[in-house]
Length: 371
Ligand code: SF4
Ligand code: SF4
Image (tube, rainbow, N blue to C red):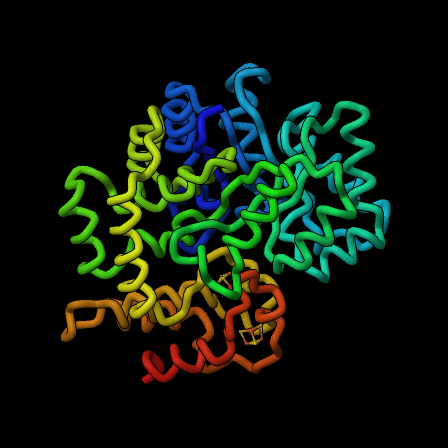
C-alpha cells in the first residue's frame, strides 16, 4: 500500500463557517485524482465535519468505486459511548452512513486516560474484537493522544491491537507534551505499525516563517513546504500510512506527485529540517492543530482554533503595519463571541489533545485583538 492516506477531516467547503457545506463536485474530482494515482487509503470519523464526513465518503467514494478498490478507516466516537449498548449502536450507524458491510480499519477515537477507562467500562475493545471475528472489521486499533506510559499499558492489555494512529510531525517529534518519538519507538518495539495523523500539524507546518521556507526552497525550489513535513513522517520505517486532510485539488496534486514514487529524506534534508524546527519553535506562540475537539463543548461558542490561528499568524506576520488578522478577527466577532468572553470553565482544556493552556491563550488573543 502506498504511504499516503486521504483524510476526510478538512474537506473543501463552500462556506468557511459551515463545516457541512462540503463542495461535493470538487470532492469527487479530488477522490478521482487520488484513486487514479493508485492511492487507496481513506480515513474518516463519526465526528468529522459535524458528523457528515462519513456520509460524504459514501457519496464520493463508496457509491462511485468497487468496494475492493479502496480501504476505509473510521472511528468509534468515545465521547458518545455512555453504555455498553452504544458500541453497537454507533458502529451500525457508521456502517450505514458509509454504506459498507465492513470497515478495513476501525479505531477507538483519540484515546487518552479518560477514554481508555471508558472503553474498559463499556467493553468497547471487546466489541471491536467481536466485530473482527464476524468480518465486519478487518483490522482493529486506536488513535492516541496520551503519554507513553498509557500507550504501553493499553498495548499490553489489548495485545490484539493491529496498528496505532499517532500524531507525528517534525515539530512534535521531541515535544515532551506530545511524546511522538517515545510513542513511535514503543509501537515499533511492540511490532505495531503506525498510521500518522497531523503530519503538518493542522496546516501550521505550511505557514512557517519565511526564513524557514527559504531554507526549504533554496534546497529544493520545486518542492512544496508541506511535502517536507509529509516526507518526514513517511520516512519513518514503521509508518504504514501518512494521513493528509486535503482541502483542495492543489493539495491532492502535490501530495500524489511526490508520494507516487516515495523517496525518504536524506541526511542533508534532515539537517535542514532540524534548522527549520529551531526557527519555528522560536516563533509559534500557540501550537494549536485546529482539530476542533474543544469547540463543541464550549458553552460560550468561542471558535478557539480560529482565534489561535489568527494570533499565531499575526505574530509571524512580516507586515508590521496593516494587520489582516485584526480585520478578520473584528469581522468574525460581529457574529461570534470574542476571546474575552471566555468564562474559564475549562471544558476546552480537558478536550484538547495537545494539552494547551487554552484559557491563557485566549487571554493573549484578547489582549492583541479585543480593542
Ligand atoms: S474555558 Fe472558555 S473557551 Fe474553554 S470551554 Fe470554557 S468558555 Fe469556552
Ligand atoms: S485548542 Fe486544542 S482542541 Fe482546540 S483546536 Fe486547538 S489543538 Fe484542537
